[in-house]
Structure formats: structure tokens, C-alpha cells
Length: 455
Image (tube, rainbow, N blue to C red; front, side, top):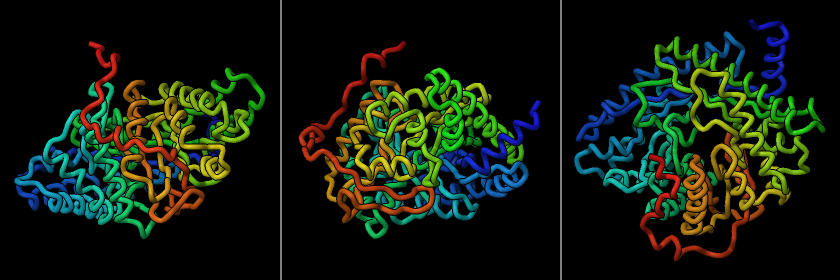
């Protein structure tokens, strides 16, 4: 039973503490849209997306109105597009661009905010279509508005494909150059993964996994502001009390996500997939993971003790949320994107938060180095080295890690890059001045660690 106090508590969370559903994401399989002829493939893709998702935005708005729960984004994810490219007769980058533009048009037709899945999974090697798709990513993201892309370059089972790592460094550089007039915005729509998950509802890394059904509804919840406000009530108490408070709050947040997911599934006639119970921050004041860590007693996020505080937060969020939904999945934990988190932005500007500390934090958080602006003259090899470091953390620790980095054209350390909306703005952070070009040039594959032998 829900008592009046719980109703009032939820209303306060929404009105005063920035509680929201970050996204309803419809996953759509494109496996039956493959065709040797690119025009026929595009026709099938457009028809399937606009047919399945025609009521997605409408239903999302209806649920918002009925339950008073803000749903910030309605999104679509599709099967990694490299699958479609591989089926084409003589694939090339022009055919890839045609498919990217089709995804963009279909997504705009149904009114969603983003569509993800312009993706390739190359953790063990490339097919011809996958390599061509990766080569097309910069132009595809520059010439579309709401298409997002991801590439998985490593896994605990396979190791790290260092040829793919090298290719992604140059891909990110080119994407930044092609969108230099708006701060390298294409890079904000591109994620490089290790151990990518198949049911992630969050952009830019969402895609509809090979093991998924034809269509599914996934929901991502968010509530950093709610967690911070809850911790204000246990100021000075032991960490056991802190963990219990976070767990209880995460349970309440996730229950709301379960309600929205179930309603969306029923109204759209599409199976419910998962609730991703991640704490996803926004640039809004108070809606920050960094502020949660500071509420635990840190003077500034990034100081000594930050990694321990984040580990507690991430674990408690998962423990509290997992009992609140019939199916939990996605990334689930605490996100630490710099430009999307007001507290992280402040910490980076003050010098308390460095990229080295962020890398340490990614060992215990939900994803990885996310929405980080670096100087525009950063080399492709340096970007590849950053990707390799983050992939190694994911591979060895059997967790998902990712890099979404923006070498901001014409910008240097201390400048600010503006993206607007949920992507916010971020300070350009400094990098180690020493190079790793020879390391990246070796190519090949870093072998999988011993813990990959689990059979």
C-alpha cells in the first residue's frame, strides 16, 4: 500500500529535488531490414522505425501528464548498423551515410530526441562492413542531427583490439574537425566502449543488442538531487547510515522507473526490457553526482577520498535499486560526465578534479571518462592511449568502461566548450604532455586477462 506520506515524498522529489525519468528508449531490431541494395535497406529501416515508434513520444507525454513524472527524453536504439552494412552489395562510406541519414529522418519523423545504434562491435576483429562504418562515423555524425554512434573495442573475454583503438583516435579527431564550428559537437554523440552492454537506454552509447528481441522498452531513471537531499538528513553519521540512506532512496527512485516502464510497455504493446537505475546528472544546480560526494564530507569532488566515496555510492545505488524492479540492466550506477554535471564542472575549473583522478574514479563508477573536453591540438595517438587505458580498466575488472572525449577545435586548457541542453558546458582539461605514439603503432590485440577463462 502507498500511504499519503509516500505520495507527498514523491511529489517533493519531483518538484524540489530534480527527480525525473531520464529516458524511455525503444530498442528496435534491424536484422530483417538487411538487403544487398542500399535503397531497399533504407526503405525497410525507415518503415520499421516509423511503424514501431510512431506512438512512443505520444505515450511518453501521456504518462508524464497522468503521473506527474517528468520524462526528459524519448529515444530509439537500433541493432548495430554494421550488421546492415555487411549485408550490402559492395559497401562503401557513401552507402553508410545514406543509412545514417535514413536513421536521422526516421527518428525526426516520430519526434524522438536521439537515435543510437550507428555502431560496430569490433573487440576481436573487423568485418569489411564494420571497418567502413567506422571510417564513415565522422561524416555521418556531422551530417545528421540526432544520430549517435558507439564502437566496442574490447572485452574481458576477447582482450583489446588495438587496431580499433588506433582507428578510433583518428575517428574522434576527424569528427571534431568536421564540427569545429560548434565545439566538436559530433564527438559528444560518439562513445568508445569496452564490455558494452546490449540493453543500455542512455545515449550516446545505446544500441539494440544482438541477443535482444524484435522490439523492447528500456527506461533510465535519474535522481542525484534526491540522493543529495536524503544525505543532508544523516550529516555526520557513520558510513553504514550513509549506505542505508542511499539504498532506500535508490529503491524509491527505481520503483518510479518500474512504474513508467510497465505503463509504457502496456500502452505501446511492446515487451518491457529493463530499468537502468543509474544516477545520471544534468547541468541543473543540485542535480549532481559531485554534490553527493561532497555531501559525504569531501571539500571538493576530486580531492583524496573521492574514489572511496564514489565506490560507496555506486554500490549502494545498485543494492537499493535491484529489488525495486523485476528486470534491472543497462549500466546501472553513478555516471560522472564532466560537462553534464554542475559539481564536476566546478571541481574541474577549480583544479580539484584532473583527468587522472577521473580515470581512478572510473574503476568504481558506472561507466568511464565521459563528456570530457580536451585541447583541440590533442593528437589522435594521445586520444587512442586514453581509450586504451580506460579499456584496460574495463577488461581487467570485468566491467563496462567507455570514453566520450571532445578535442575541442581551437580551444586550450581553461577555455569552456558550450553544448547546451543536457550536454551542458565543460572546461577544457589538461592532459599529460608526453606521447604514446609508438605504443599505439604496435597494433594487434592485447590478450584477454586470466579471469576471462571462467568456463
